[in-house]
Image (cartoon, rainbow, N blue to C red):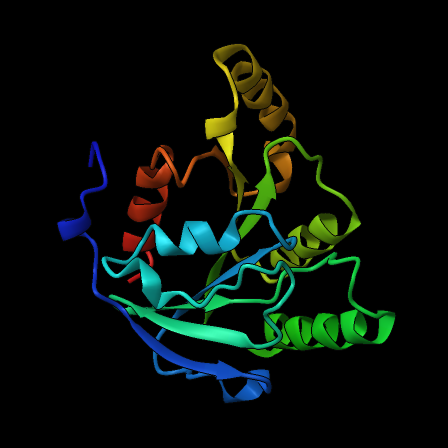
Length: 195
């Protein structure tokens, strides 16, 4: 697929917001979306639905406190709360971290994960933890380097070179832009392999 045309995308549907990860539907395989607050995770999710307003977002980073489930063709997309949001209390961060960890460790239907990271950032402890967790479960985790539309060609080339260093830790490392819709074709093919 050369370009992502709106009519090629599924309508999708919102399946619910879950504070208890054990209540997330398990009748279909799922792909988990993870990432720091303001990493472009919601923008990426919106890219895969014909109705982009389907994905719940807020103008204030760090507002999501539930695991939000969306139906994408024959998969569930599970949107997790963004981590690393400094304005949350330590207790709130711990509660959200435990909820995400419980889901990742207990859900037998998880087929893959997409970890979003602002292309100008380096992976930190949280990203390393997630990568190790997916490795231990032998599930593919893709590192999506977001917001590349802000870069010129020289900067983008530097990001691609740096991305090569991360490849041993992830199933794939994909520089992408939800604005320019670049790099999304790989993810669409990958999702198709999970049905």
